[in-house]
Image 1 (cartoon, rainbow, N blue to C red):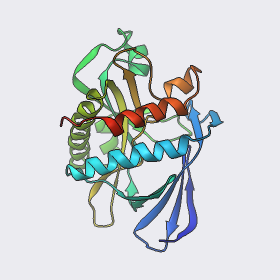
Image 2: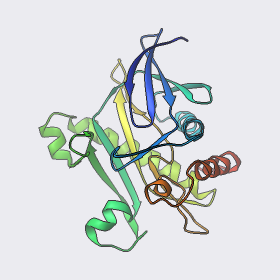
Image 3: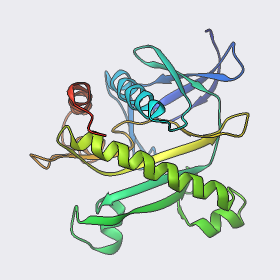
Length: 240
């Protein structure tokens, strides 16, 4: 597989074409961003650990039957994925109160949410990724009702798996963000990234953050935190 022309540079990854028109080359960068890209810092080792976590979880979810874009991880910072046309949506699942949800409703931190709360955000840097509901998505022809039903169902499946996976290693999955796209044959797949960049994780024993909140709140070095998450995932027994 040969890396070809640069297709896109995002906040934490670069995407390249390959000599296979149906495969993309994803390079995980040593970069962290917050405030929708307004805060941006180079962080040694971050790209490699995020790639390791993402590849591990994508491979596990693929094995359970979740359709994903994942193909392989040929080196420390690279992932090969199926080319997908992405939905311009972030699908957020909240298991516990935190972040903007906590501020919006003035609720107690980490109050359990039953059932889990689903939210959509329209991907637009210019608009700061605004909240968007199902009816707005359909009216704006971003996705139809059947697609949103699929996204909700897949998000629930992923949530069930990841909640158990992290609980087995002493980590609470507070909330997370997923992205989806369609392959050339129309199949809806889980795509983008699965890492502490888009998960909110809390250590069950200490209550400490094990995600990008460490960077957002200037609580210390980020890469060692992500390495701790990866080390636990490697050693953890999967009770799923």
